[in-house]
Length: 320
Length: 320
Image (cartoon, rainbow over all chains, first blue to last red; front, side):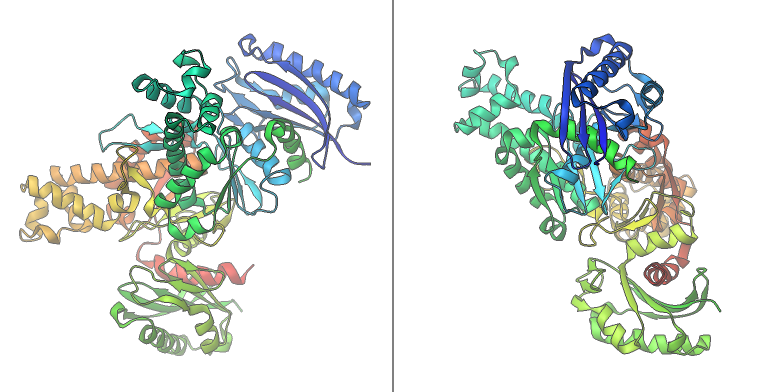
């Protein structure tokens, strides 16, 4: 009889609750919109309802569940299971999520931030299988990192390792108090901003055709579609964003000397259009010998990653 | 009967060979100048002669030695024990040091770069005792880091973790191909350069008095002495260098969330004159929650650090 886990993926736009096995297989899944503005309590009520529903569909009672894994936006204290004001979950100020769910479900509950959970998922069941030192980057609306070092998730002193979003990439000099940070330059909104700036200077681009001329509507996906049609402006934007991404990866290479970078959302959607300039910039910026040892690949679990990530949080802790 | 180890510290200016115990106690020690321009072979001959001498003084034969630890400038491959052209050891191109010494001494030999060896020394016997996550920075003529993560030395995919010297701290924009790096801005020569630049603009400083007016002779030590006499220019230089140091530490904080930074040579010589501006800059630049968890202190082993470091290389491997 294989082990059965319950996973919860708490995102800023959607909630998912699922059952799965220790092989990373998802059995059943229930989704709802988050409606994040409601604040934590109605959302937690939803998660409990969804747990009932998914267990019913799977044909299991709660007692058959070995552990519950929760993947949630950080910052959060994984050891205590307390969530501290994630930017995509307004009102979640010091919510003792682990404690609440443990009491309600009467099962062992484990909570991890989404970057760490994603790293575990890609390492166990995705692009990172078999790698000893791997860095996963969310590269979605934010830029978080999950670090697998010497075959283990590395959390740091208080669970905040991998908070790479704030690392300055452009800082003009000793008096520059507003450097441009990794997340600002490379995550989804930053990529859109780069495209919008380029379009304001030069509106002759396939990107604009696809949004009916509304510059504000340009997204990473639109940029990618235009770039695949060889739109010069879209290619130029991805070259610039990829360069910034490569600079951030170079810093991680110099410090951690990993074997693999697995790039989430934007890495999956844009592939080599983004990753090829990133590889070039990383080669130019990082220590040569360490560059030789590392590869940059897109995440492999695709849209599945949030589900498998939640499952892996339970797996990781329960198996220890 | 306690375990006895032989340690070798191969520096750019001096060589040391010593005997010591598993308690970090140094029994006997022999020093010689490196005369690095001789190249590897006469230096290795010297190390073997010095080994004989130190063993004789200790009153032990080689067979009583449990293991030999070597601390040497990187880059080097610790697993294979091969040294690759350290900048302070000209001509050491792919020297299989571990193999050579193993054959000559007929004991187990282990080789580690000086930053990793220093990290082990401070973690076992110095400022880092009892800390689970600690970063040691050499902060001497170069800027290397040794990472203790989850109570273990972290080496990375091929032993190059902690090569932080190349991390860009000042990069003006997307087309800046010559960013100013961590080591360039913060290690000994960088500190001297900052002082020399300042003195060319404003020669009214106690620093110049101490070098007979020869700007080129200003060193970190001279800057420190002048700063302790409240020389405004020296204080300003240390403020700037400390700020750069803090920026580098901030990046390490964001990625690793350590509990402790232990700062080598310059940290010992300059103390809070350098570390206080570093703390301020780190607070301003890194993720707030992680800053709360970390302290910055000077290395505790002082001039001893190289000896204990070499000893710890043997200890670390032999006890595994």
